[in-house]
Length: 320
Image (cartoon, rainbow, N blue to C red; front, side, top):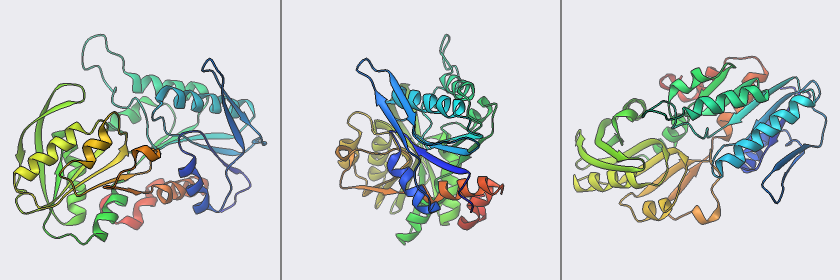
């Protein structure tokens, strides 16, 4: 792959992931600096020429969400004004994705607002992983590739050589995701029936399916406070589940999530590195698998004008 016209930059939230991606592509990170002034203003300086280049910015809009989002927007503006030929934002975790509709009167649709901000700033393409809702793709007026981390998680669980597996969706909305994993693992599926009386609070009403004596894998797109997924794990244990594994793409881990997960009945918590976790959020039960190879392959296919969907051929037909 020719690298002369390719430059990859990393901002504050995703530097380690960006370094792994560059290792996969046998290239170096671009030189840029992010400055935060005392009053909270942000300055991004690009210290090399990007004129006529296709530039990739790697930045998850995770906590602190507003700061990381502003860094990304300012970087896009700087690159546009520096005459970059094309700007692709690789946003492994797309913040504000949960606000994708008006659930009540007078609520914002913030995921649409963020999409408009990125487009207005000058981005030409967006690559993300496991959007909270697929319809967010329609909020963009530029090409967007919503990649899937499920094959990576599937590979990990295949490597454990578990028997009597049951893949569990923590709610009805995640049933499709759970079914795809269950198909790949040739396992049964179960669904936890729950209701949400208010945000970040869930009440488990029951389980659809048989989990008794099974090695259960609970799969979700993100874990925020951990309350919902831990409550589900406790019910699985009460229903006779053998070992319980919790898996997700985005480890948001707000508040006391890490403590809840460590003290949960789950044997292991498997997440990806779409969100870079600080040392204080690393705990014994946590296992992190990387999306760097997936994103590096995606960049390579974009550069070589190949279908991005071809990235998933190595994982089998069920993930294409």
